[in-house]
Length: 154
Image 1: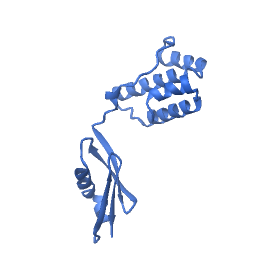
Image 2: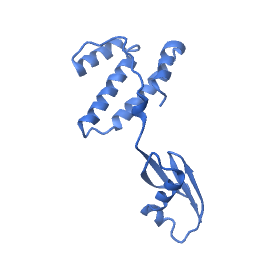
Image 3: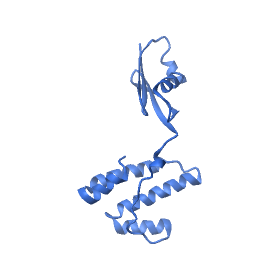
Image 4: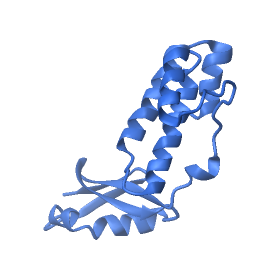
């Protein structure tokens, strides 16, 4: 998803509200998938919902003000536009997809600092991946950083 600064440009300079709304929908989808197990998880979702309401306010002010009052009990504070906290975007772990001959055979979590060699070794150690490598020779391993590992075997 594009950072909030692009959404600000969509509203202010370009006035392309459809792309702003599409990005806000992406945020809503992410918030819907976010866990709500702990108080901190719920606080993250709550902050995200408030950011969504702030970003939709220029398009649907009455609805956003009503929802804001329902959620927080306070009057909507006009003019407080969300900003990005870049440090919150840093991840400790990444989820990597593992493919064998182009077919997804598993997923794994790896440290964000892992290099291609480590990721390749971890992928080859996965039990479900090893099942598809029995009696096969690995011809090539493609590691796409932060996304996937594809093992080509014959």
